[in-house]
Image (cartoon, rainbow, N blue to C red; front, side):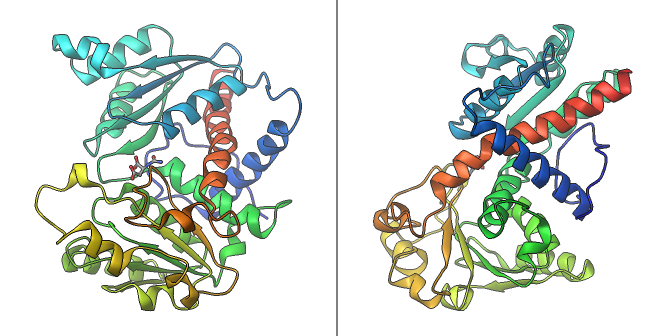
Length: 337
Ligand code: NCD
């Protein structure tokens, strides 16, 4: 398996990630997974470095997971809560970032409800010739790279726990179902999963998988020679699928009435034990969380440990974020020496 020396200062999108980079992340995460199985779960890799979590939007698992990952690497962590910050006094986001820079922050993990904010902070940090690395922890409807990478790690370690690698998904059928339109998780996963050679099927109602968006992603993936298939009904996406990823209905991002009712949505696109009989017998189900129980997935299926990988995804998130922070931090150390 080809892995590459890490060259990225920022991780903002998976659009231009190369297969060797995915393999480097998977392999590094596997070694941190091993660290996390020990009695002493901490390593000194980022000792003396500061990781600031700048979450301008609510989050449970991503924020906590980045914080724990940074702590396990012995970094000092700063947590920012917009409601109690100087943003309420009119400070701009870039000035907030510069304040954290002045405190000696090495890595900024940024989440914002507007697409492009992490990019804007990264540009500003580069313009100031700082060596800060910026991590996009979810920007609007754009991308969520760490979620897609932890999903990839969850799938690849299931197939080969010793040596997770991108090529393991080659030829697999993976369905991504639900509110594609509003999902940054889907957008990042489309890049990583199609890069593996998997056949990725997107399924959702036309209001949540609009024709224009569908045409755009299909043209783009065809140009890259990637396999992406779109459906406006669930069944063809589930047929013989190896993995199914269902997405939360992102009601906070819906400006119009895009659905007749949650009940009808569940009837047409909700995953249940009955529905997934169309998939391959050993199918596994993923969801990035948080889950609307009984809407995009039935409670019974969500809690079925034989099929649901949801808890595994959360667990994988720590090792994967340790790997990502470590790779960003080690690149920085190289620049300094
Ligand atoms: C996702 C997010 O915030 O984009 N959740 C997550 O990070 N685990 C998906 C969602 O909110 O539905």
